[in-house]
Length: 276
Image (tube, rainbow, N blue to C red):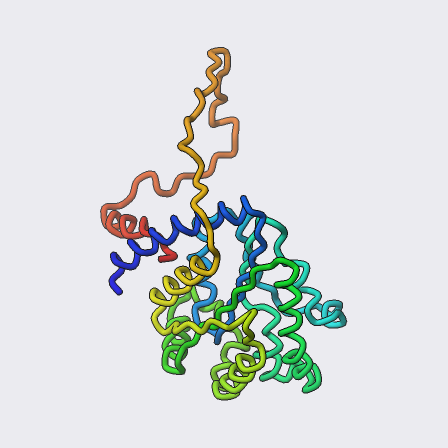
């Protein structure tokens, strides 16, 4: 898909996402969207595209790190429950309780008993969430070994992305087949009629992002509750007020007051949305 075509469709879908946000707020819905997939599958980029135009107070992203020593002693699902939405909120999990079915299983961070308990408990846990009024939507972003290899190499070559390559990411490459088996077991045990897994071909990022957004919009029967056009009130004017001179403040130095001609084209290109 060409960038121009992609951006036009993305802009159209962003308008619909704002409408969905308004409907979630108005109706007091509680929405949980789970994103799982291999390292470099594009989970973070897809989530950013969904939330980019939304109110972060309404659409929250949860990306938990390694559990603390205290959290390791809790009921496994406990630390995720504190992040579940209240009425009028949508929470997007960039990885979730399914860590146990993936990285913890493959890397040996949980016992066999804990792993099998997770596979048998999770459908009931998710049914309880749904019974409480939560709308639960789950996405698995699927990529090939070749795509993962190419994206890992791009991260190595780009200093802006190098932080994304953790030792765990490198180990996931070495254990590609083990992760494949873990994924297959997870999908087999935890894809239910009430909370099915939606598998997304994520080998082409632009297609994956658009397909996920379209599916998300279709999963919730929302109405357009766009408020009526807003009229700005007149600005307050008081002739007796005098704005202080800048010299009274610690003013940040403007390094770009004069842009060298050689950078003009570069800055023009940078005006494009970096997340697109």
